[in-house]
Image (cartoon, rainbow, N blue to C red; front, side):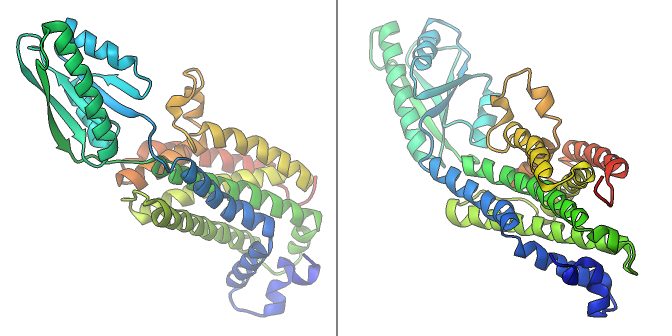
Length: 373
């Protein structure tokens, strides 16, 4: 950017009454001219959603069966043992309340109850199936019928001694893309704050723009606020693009309040912008910015539940990853988007974000410099 178009000369050149508005418009133009920033902040998150959506677009490769074993006898042990030996079955056992709640959330395809009277005569076993996933539910019911019949024959030498009494349940069925989109929104907010802020302010310092700015009538707070407004607006644009993409291509399950989503997104953006300012405070050039920003962003990208659930991580690692700022942001966005959660419902995540915001602002006051060190 040449000195003739630098932020330091905007007010004098445009002769406007509102320097903040002029600076903000200029900041948007500068942002949109940077093709690398546009790619990584807009098209890269879109590519992730499309690619992961295509990879996981064929649905589940296994069926999820929940068994409520109230019998705890030889027959129920036969059923449970045989089900565990099937690679295509993800078996869970638990109480009726626990398994029904999982079915209601869409985490089970079928829940079968093995009552205490199992083995005492002909019996119809209650089986609740997910009406929203007929293919998976039909496969799970067929598997259960097969093994209930085998257990009947092994125990009573008659077939069938037990039958399934199938009852449909309207579950909330979430796909992987439903899990992914809020996480990618959080990731894109992180990237915008880290890379856009850090790269641009290091470039300003190298070109002497910030030093010249101090010698103009322009207020420093107007200059900073114009950049902050630009990045916050771009965070909203990123949210809108990814949500619309998910709705159009993958029928994204979205029941959240847009205003709550934006509020949480702004808080997350403020945190990562503060981190970006911190990086630009001690990074001497753009190469150092790239190294430091990647060192911060890449571990969080893969450890904060953006692409996969934290439950898949080693137990010793989870206490660490649960307190990362991107984890708080992704969890809050996911709860609002998929569960329709209120801000009060995600108060734990908001408290975590507030702590990180204070930490990053304190670091900014100590490390940010207006000139190259």
